[in-house]
Image (cartoon, rainbow, N blue to C red; front, side):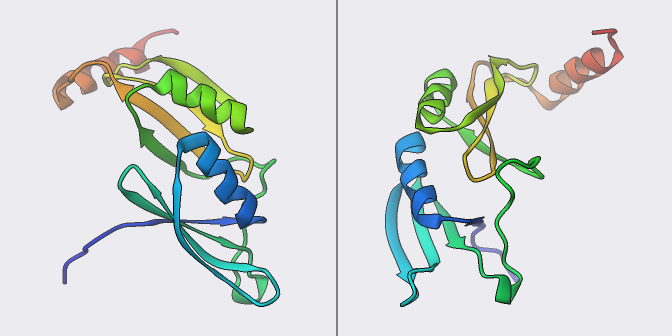
Amino acid sequence: MAIHELFVYLRAKNSDEAVKYYRRAFGATETFRLVEPSGRIGHVELELGGTTIMISDEFPEFDVYAPDPAGRGTFTIHLHTDNADALIEQALQAGATLIRAAQDQFYGERSGMIRDPFGYDWLIGHSIEDVTPEEMQRRYTDICSSDN
């Protein structure tokens, strides 16, 4: 058995607003949506940098819930771009909250983190140097061993 693709499937208390946010913040393009007669969104697909992100509204009757936007994130979506600082600023202007400002990282990336208005954390970064796994481990060990 082979795995062919992996998709992120997000749940939002208001998928329509989430789609609007992801358009403004990241330039996502909606490819299609399925809407119940009542107006609840059962499925939306967005294209973002060649990747499909799926979103739906909450469906408590199927045990499908969105995160609490004011709560703590439980996972992070890593978005790799050509200019992390600019994309973080764009996401903030669209309504995100800054979790960690962009800075150069030991693993060869400049990155920072935002939380979108729907409770999802996004690590946004761009490459600043190629770092081998061995060098990355050395740097990580140094960081963990220091008194910083």
